[in-house]
Length: 414
Image (cartoon, rainbow, N blue to C red; front, top):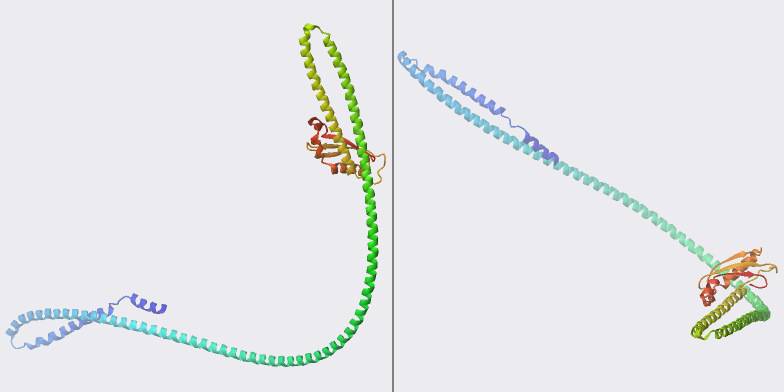
C-alpha cells in the first residue's frame, strides 16, 4: 500500500508542461504566413489587360490587398487563437489522457502488486501447508514408529510378565511347600517352646512369689524399724521440747519471781516513804492544812502515775523476754548443727528485723572459725524468720528489738 500511494503522489507533483502547445502555436502562425505568401502572387497575374485599368485597379487592388491582408491576418489571428485554443485543449486532453494513463498504470501497478502479494500469500500458504503436511507426515511416521516400538515393548513386557508369572507360580508353589514344612517345624518348636515357657513361667512365678514374700517381710520389718525409730525420734524431740519448755518456764517463773520480789520490795519501800511523808505532813501546821491536802492529792496522783509506769515497764520487760525466748526457740528448732562441730565453737549473728518482724539481714559479727558452722547459724536464722510476734511488743520495745545479737554454741543459742 505504501508503494501504491507513493506512485500517484509523484505524478501529481509533476509540473504541467506548456512546451508542446507553444510549438504548435508557432507552427500554426508560420503556416498561416506561408499560405498568405503563396496565395498573394497567384492573384496578381490575373489583371494584365489594361494599363489604365491596371493603374486604377492597382490602387483599388492595394486597398483590397490591404483589406485582404488584414482580413487574412484576422483570420490568421483567429486561426492562431483557435489553434492555440485547440492546442490548449489538445494539451489538456493530452494531460487528461496522460493522467488517465498514469492512473491506469498505477491501478495496473496496484493490481500487479496485489496480485503479487496474493501470489506471495498463496505461495506462503502453500509453503506452510506443505510444511504442515511434511510435519504431519513426520509426526505420523514418528507416531507409527512409536506405536510399533510400544507394541514391541508391550509384547516383550507381556512375555516377561508371562515368564515372571510362571516363575512366580513356581516360586509360590516352592515357597508354599517350604512354608508348610516351616510351619510344621515352627509348630513343633512352638509346642516345645510353650512347654519350656510354661515350666519356666511356673518356676519364675514360684521364685517371684518367694521374692515377694521375702520383700514383703523385709518391708514390714523396715517399716516397723522406721516406725520405731520415728517414734523414738519423736519421743526424744518431745522430751527435749518439754525439757526446753520446762526450763524456759522455770526461767520465766524465776525471772517473774525476782521481778515480783523486786517490785514488792520497791513497793514496801515506797509505802514506808509515803508513810513517812504522810506523818511529816500531819506534823505540819494546821494553817497549811489546805495546801498540805492539795499537795497530798497531787502526790497521790504522781504516785499512781508512777505505779502505772512501773506496771507498764514490767509488762514491756516480760513481753521482751517472751519475744527473745520465742526467737531463740524458733532458731534452735531450725538449726541443723554440722556434723563434727566441736564443743568450743561459738559464732555471733547480728539480726536485723523489719517493722512486721520480717528478716532484713543476718550477718556474722564474730566468726567461729568454721565456715560450715557459721553458715548453719545464718541458715537457722533465715529458716526461722519471719518473727511476727515483734508486732505484739510495745512500740518502744519494738524499736529496741529491731536489731539484736544471737550467740550460737553447739549446746544452745543465747
